[in-house]
Amino acid sequence: MTPRISSRMPWIAAAVLLSTALFVPSSVLGAAKPAKGAKPAAKAAKPAAKPKTDSGSSASGSSTKPSTSSPTPYEMPSPAQPEIPPTPPAPPADTSTKAAETATKPAETSTKAAEAPAAEAPKEPLPEAAPSEPSIPQETTIPPVVDSTPPTEPAPVYVEHLGPSSYPGRLRGIYGGSLWLEPSFHGLQWPYMAKSGVGVSGSFWVDSGNEQIRREKMANTAVWLQQGRAVLRVTPTYTNGSFFIQGQVELVGNVCQVAGTICATSGTFDTDDLWIRFGQWNAWDIKVGRFEAWELYHTGMGLDINTLERRGASNFGLNSPSGLDAPDFYGMNWMHDRPSAGLGVGYLAFHAYPSHNFRFELLGELGTNDASTQGYTYLGGRPALILDQGWMKAKVGAEYERATGDTGSFDASLGQQVDSKMKRTRKGVGGTLQFVVDPRAEFGGNIAIGTQNSIPADNGIVSATDTYTRTSVGGFANLRLGALWLLGVGVNFTWQNDSFYAPSSPSPDYTAHLQGFLALQYYLARQLMIKGVLGYARADFVASDASVPVYSNAMYSGRIRLMYLY
Image 1 (cartoon, rainbow, N blue to C red):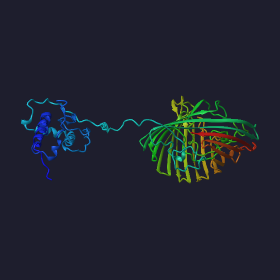
Image 2 (tube, rainbow, N blue to C red):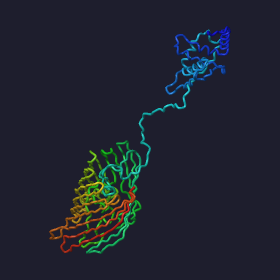
Image 3 (cartoon, rainbow, N blue to C red):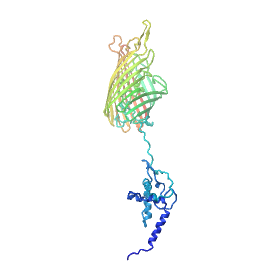
Image 4 (spheres, one colour):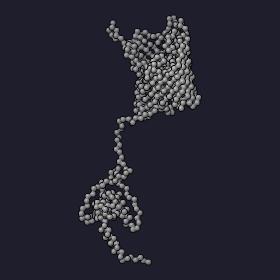
């Protein structure tokens, strides 16, 4: 059946068109008329027809107002409203969609409005609308301006704890052993810091024990003794990852507060290290101040520095029949230990690291101990080489030190200045060979020989008793008994020949000193080292004068050391 079209439909359609023309604002109608040459897609820019609410705005808000400028790179227009699926009849939904698309193209809409025919424009001019800026979504932020100028100050300072693991993977020795604790870190640039900051580290140790010295020609000695030292180490560092500048100071607290034969110095605080260095990590550096040189003679888990055990079977100030005393061992240590001649004596050193296992140190000494008629000024040098393969370490070096009187005299008879004739010259060579069987054992041997020539007075006469040749040989071995237990043994033998000859005597004064120890250590919680050491020493004295009998001293000692490293 053919559908019939009512005769009334044309009149109904005409009425709908007339009502639309009466209620829709003329500005919308003018903007909606397509311009010449416009693309077909632009026809979708007609806004939705809604009741008039504001003479200067359309229903879609300010985003549909004409804009006189395009958005800046960091400004984005508001996103279009989501498209609503159309429902019959189609025109209402279609006009809503067109209004949403118009909101996304304000510049194009403005162009079309300008090209609309003047016949369809309103009789009265529209008020000029202020140009609106596209809205910025909340999630969009203006990127900050990047300053390409490099910073003139280092990164913010932080504090870092510097433990013995500053060089992970480097085999210094078995864990907790004496080579692992070697103070110069086998020549490594310790303390190492990867970034700028302040490093903090240090140590505490306290010894409690007993020592007895039996002397054949002098009084015996029997003492109970407690010694202790604490070190606070502060190391401010600047580094850019390769180049670095570092300073270090070690403040020392001493248990001993009274100077005497046991404590050479006393005081609440003392200073060990005080130096500045700069260079490139694992390549080179220059170091100036008060510090220890590289170690070239290793004694093991006993004969620790600053202990009575290390001094052995000495006279401790007693007058011996021959005037002789037990010689200290010579371990290339005339210019190894920190300068102690006076506040005006210090070191400077150049270190080179041509490869990861080869290291070189050239140490220099300069300064004066006293600006008086009895004072000396010091100049010296000490080259050292280390070849470190991890499992094997070979170290060798030499040293030369010259001390001359720093104040001369005025000879009135000649009417001129006379230089001081006081002089002391020291020189020596030595080395060590060490092996590490990680994690079970470490052992090694040492040898060194040194000579001293002394003119202690301004008369230019050599002191035969203070001019000598001293030789030391020794060895050590440390064995792991368990995860936290170590056993250590060591022996050291030193002999010295003076230049003094008694009348008609074929041989000079001779002294010898044998020192040995047995040590057992437990590492409590891998933090506190508890070490017991039994020591023995024997000193023999043979005077050049045959009328003085040969005699000996013997020392027996035992001590327990608690040491905490942080």
